[in-house]
Length: 218
Image: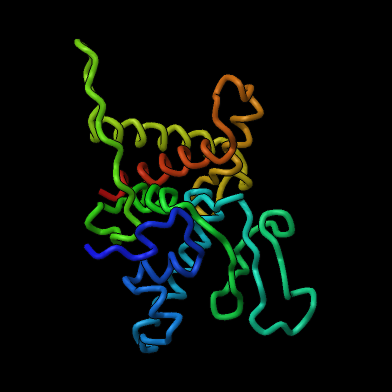
């Protein structure tokens, strides 16, 4: 594997991730070395990413997206900020808007894994090398990947039951809304108990939702 800047950097922007998901080199895209046919699916990846940002399964660095109108037809549409200025990203259209956001590579990797992707499915530049396993203490069993997946699936089922007893504010389309669930969690339990902030909890809840949905499709 030849190293590229995308293999090494820990921060990737919105468009770079979309290009890498399509198997394209972002630097070559900037140099206009791809055909229109090569780039045809990029808007679909961008829309999928926007949906994942909104439902909390793809974490944005600093938690903020800036949406720019490509037409710049009116001052009101030139710059909009999510989540501060917008209730949702439903209006986002890759053909009409530029979405500016940054992601940590490990967060993109976690999103793809929780969506059911394997390391073989995930482009090399978006993979994260796992930590070296630590030797187990004598008499202490090691958690397996299968056990971790079953725990995520069970958590995802619990989330589905929880939101099923609540109103539409707890759903994004047909899926549970991770951000709304985390808000309830943080309201019910002091921060010093969970020792996790909003971003980390959203990551776990989003992964659980994805795992349970994948389980139901199997």
